[in-house]
Amino acid sequence: MDAEPVHQNWFEVKYEEVFDNRPNLWYYGEGNWFELKTLENANIYEVHLDRSSYKKIKTVSNNKDFIYKIYDSQKLVKTYQLTANSYKLLDFPKKGDNWDRYGSRDKGGDNWIDEAAAAGFFGFLHTLKKNGINEKVYYNDISANDKRNIGHKTHKTGHDIDIRYPGADNSVGQKLWSISKDYYKTEEKFVKVLEDILSISIDWGFMKKYNYAYKKDIKHTSGKAISVHQDHYHIGFKR
Image 1 (spheres, rainbow, N blue to C red):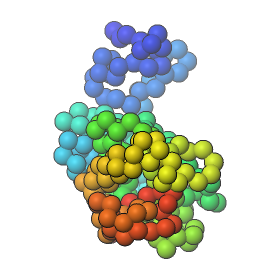
Image 2: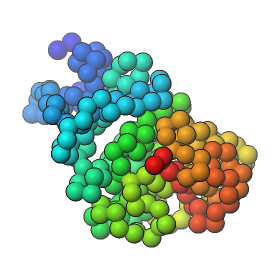
Image 3: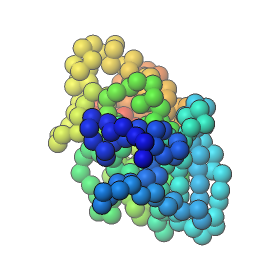
């Protein structure tokens, strides 16, 4: 196999040099590379970063398997395979290249998401990385596995997501607005980054009227000051 290791590590290779531009469909084990067999009999979404758009290209009735193919300029850059539960919610990945979780977990998990919202959230996360926003995204509640109330007015249908402000880490305890302000040195710089992030959420189907932040007049939100959002912002997908 004609390929060069990355940092002398064969577990990290440049996909385009090895695998016919089919990234993430291979894994390494027992001293060799193996091709992953993705499900063909599944619901399939295509997410196009260069167009800020997604489309469900295949629907399989009564099938709980979902494949999300992430493209940039027609090149496949990532593939995700999720499974829906009996409430038609999908278990969104807890970690990714530029995201992770924060906060405590509810019984049965609290990262359950609507299928279309998953496409939008994947697009949002990948676009942040593509646009050079390097701060990791730490998300908390989406919805419970059974759509029960987990302490929010929303977060029951897989359309709403809580995210820590950029510049905050995912260590234990509240990370208030002031922490991010200090991270960016000035509130003006912090708000500019936050508004850029929220603008990307709008491109991916999250809606201004369902987006909330701590202070009023933040662009791409409802514009209201909401005290419960002093340690996180909220993005809400169209419904």
